[in-house]
Amino acid sequence: GDSVTQMEGPVTLSEEAFLTINCTYTATGYPSLFWYVQYPGEGLQLLLKATKADDKGSNKGFEATYRKETTSFHLEKGSVQVSDSAVYFCALSVQMSGGGADGLTFGKGTHLIIQP
Amino acid sequence: NAGVTQTPKFQVLKTGQSMTLQCAQDMNHEYMSWYRQDPGMGLRLIHYSVGAGITDQGEVPNGYNVSRSTTEDFPLRLLSAAPSQTSVYFCASRATGGSYNEQFFGPGTRLTVL
Image (cartoon, helix red, strand yellow):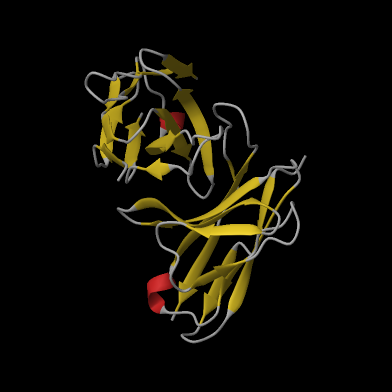
């Protein structure tokens, strides 16, 4: 079945450090890939997405590139802030034959802590 | 637009009690789903619905029932709560059709079963 593997945390960084959170996947068909963010006490918010190979998703200074050859979708940010502290989830969704997309398969989440 | 709303925010049950977690969306989305979030497990799909009157099981459906009588509402029922159902529950919805439609999540219900 489909699965997502991401580095487990917590990941602790100092403000302005470079961030990489690794994510790899296995999937049947052609998945779309996502990063969701969950701030303390809140639901999940879509951070960025990529729907085909070599696409780069970006938002709020975060980036991730869909690498089909390595089945990866690593999340990066050049300079993190304290406000980036949250749990980050990598996820995939496989397109159904009739159009639209199936449910999301999530990784276990990475807790990111940014210290001032 | 309120988006996806869930009630209650918190709930404590005793083993064997029943309850219904409410979920509603005002975006006219056909697809709705329920996930549970457990430490170190990510989110796992419980049940989903592709439209009114149509529901199906996800990855972890045991112990939960759903129904979809309207487009807006998708309640999740626990008929006889067990401690293993202690979790945070998220409802989500999205439009259907097209190559991809973003899923919108509710704020969650934190359930404790004693």
